[in-house]
Image 1 (cartoon, helix red, strand yellow):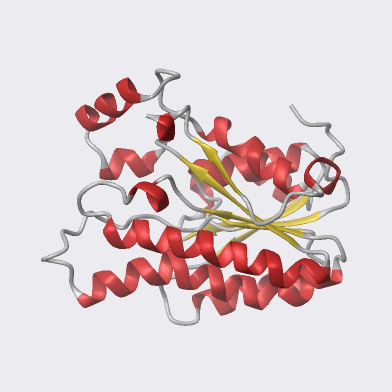
Image 2 (cartoon, helix red, strand yellow; image 1 turned 120 degrees about the horizontal axis):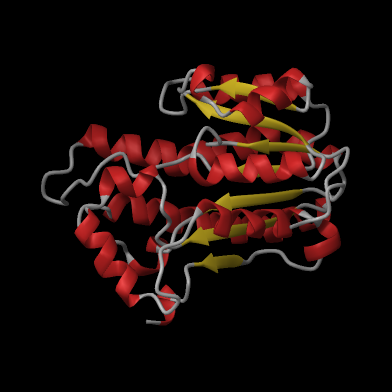
Length: 256
């Protein structure tokens, strides 16, 4: 548990925060005193948890929908975020998902473009659009979500998703070098096999159980396991000399 005032007065943007890891990251930032723009994706507000709706009523959270697959979707989100915050201390680029398992020989142009747009291009677009607000903070942090599959290549049907996450990891390292003179640190969190609706949609119970048996800690991860890494990398008091890194959160899965 982090100090409840760790991010007191800080402005935070979390994309892909309507569920899963992003939702838990937003919750922990709110618990630590931040004002948070919560990108809720395409989900209607009545499906969101009570803590978010309470934080919204108290003007601590700002719930902003946005379809990053639609033309102009990221631009609309960026415009709203810049209207709400004159300064952004932390940007969490978490929006993204596999969209489906697409075998290499059957992958359509539309499927390819959609996976790349959501997991790769939207990160570039949101980061580019919010950079003036991040520079205004003087000591800002960007944390991007990648995946263990960026290193392993993932399993069958996830080649483009995995490659897009590898792009984000390399992009983040380049940004870390480029933005260091602006006082902006850039890092990544790379979750392993985490129990969210992502795997409920794209992985069978049998596949998940087989994966669990290979993990040294002998369990799958949770959103609660992942979120503290984002807060650590966002807090200059904790990680002020850390930039250009990928923090792997996978229960030891990679060492096997």
